[in-house]
Length: 240
Image 1 (spheres, rainbow, N blue to C red):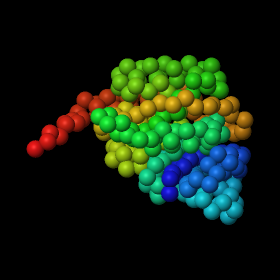
Image 2 (cartoon, helix red, strand yellow; image 1 turned 135 degrees about the vertical axis):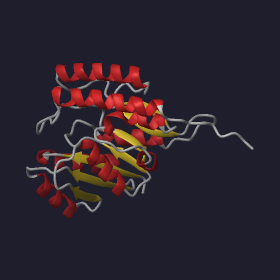
Image 3 (cartoon, rainbow, N blue to C red; image 1 turned 180 degrees about the vertical axis):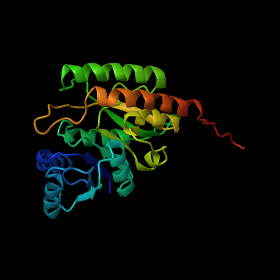
């Protein structure tokens, strides 16, 4: 199996069928699986997923008994995945599945001698289709995060990423960790890269994120990740 797609969702009933159809068209005959992690949805999402799984044998559905947040949903999906590479994307339809093969090819490309092995390829939404407030707050957050953590990633909030399953499972798990994956992978000694991807307007459903439900926890988490970085040691092993 080439890749496992992990898609965390909460109350996205109207986006299930259209996104699955796009995934099938984008990946074609590739060897892949799709893992939807329903994070305690209270709408018709569970029913839509059960119906989709009956006709799409590549789809696996995992359901949390209550909402635990996006990071926990991703963590659940990665642990259940079967492929060595993971692709994550948001379930709201704003990420374009056509970008997945491009990111996967970049991640699986030939290693360059003398360079750190690549473990994560991050999507970069250069032209975002969001409100001005969301674009402004993300721009500020990326600058602050990049300055303090040195993660060399222009868009850490993009849900579209391809990364090594083994490298992810070696990371320290905590709530909201998905916002800091590039810095955490770098801390673990892996290489990261950003690739420009398409971004689309949300046409169905309602956004679950706002400025104030991310601001304060983001600041606390930022301090925590900076603390982890300062205490990490990555010695080079010398030949005997």
